[in-house]
Length: 242
Ligand code: PGA
Image (cartoon, rainbow, N blue to C red):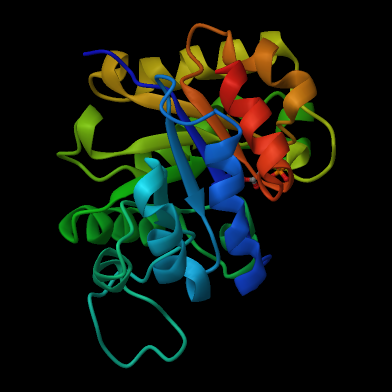
């Protein structure tokens, strides 16, 4: 099964209505429909409007998180069904900022991934070690545990995407070396069922200057981009590298 590259933007808690001009600008850049899938995950308040703005451009929209339940007494939360209803195709689950800020465990992440699939969304399941894990040589143990705990049993390659994001590389301007990324992506592929078909994205300070080298690596099937996804020009430059 061919693995179509996926370039995904994670806007995090950035973006008001005036950010929606991004989609016309991205389309005008010529980066769309060049053989890789483009996805933007805006804050929840913009999902429906982004779906509308991106509709004619072959750009997908996703959520940044969802609750594991389809509805209920969970003030402030959003279900996968709600994202789907708003027109989303994907949802990020288990981002390290959610794991750290909201105490999300592998069990919670797995339940969210299951809920996403149940609602017709493709979950992007995030894993990644901290700097302390890497400095003590534990990165494969940590990521292996996250994979085992966060991917629902019965999921096949078409049901999810993995994003490997070393925590120490997120928003810091530091990227992992090409050798470290290649080694971890090969490790991840070896750990998941039918790994040859699973798309594995790299994330952590991906920008136009380093995208080409990272995206050329064998087991890297795309990128999850934070800061550099906020401007259409830099996101487009990354997409063109893919
Ligand atoms: P960054 O964020 O590109 O700003 O490092 C990546 C992410 O957290 O998904």
